[in-house]
Length: 364
Image (cartoon, rainbow, N blue to C red; front, side):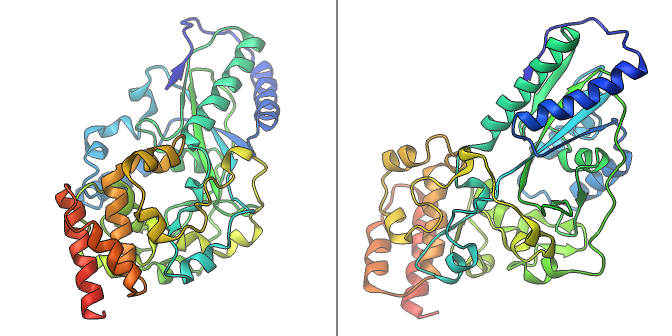
């Protein structure tokens, strides 16, 4: 979170605020964003959905979702004085990466969610949004703001929908008609009373391809996701053992899951990112599972430096790989690799390795 220090309010006319909003769009495009919109802070409808989701326990072990309370759905409670939220979109689809479906179809390879193949998006977005704030300061002087990029209790998709960036699809990701869903979101909270944009409208229609494709049936109904079954949650957010019944469904997905996006018809319009920061690193777009499983912790840290992957830690990395290898070819090399980790110091790793060895022994 990066912020300005000014406390004064600017007496800008409506015409000046409208001009400033237009200028902000131009500066955002020059900084590498593909869209930016302006929303007010009324998220009452989204707040009710959030409360129901939490009460149903669908957040799993993400306890922070409850601890943040209404600060997530009431921007002015998080940052007092907030009147508007600038919601910015940055595309990340790595067109140069190995074909996603081909990687998923090859059970000797590990699949990593396309968003995590390049540099950690948190850093990129925060830096660019801070630069946008500097442009605004240069134009009107110091003003109150805070910058966020998935780094605080922010209902980013609901805000983006209000700001006209896109609509929340049945898979609960944000969609845009001309580009699909392969993009990141970032926000700039401010007390500047800028003119707001019209909210986006929904264009999912009768399609439910995302619901039908989900390997673990985590999309329990249109617009309702049970994180406890979501492969992204299981492989990234969950720090303990992955439920045994869900392990075979994970396949070779070792960090996140993109199935609901890969099948979405709107993503046929996706364009490759021009942002070099999101280009695949270390051939992680189609890595051999056994090669990854052979990494020691120092190699894991070196190969994931500056990447979002590092946040899960080495133990969870080995946990995820053990499941993928257990779901993969039952070869002597795979058996040897698993056996070499059978006495790993971590109980978490040992459990998942034992499960994978049992899968191989049983021929399942």
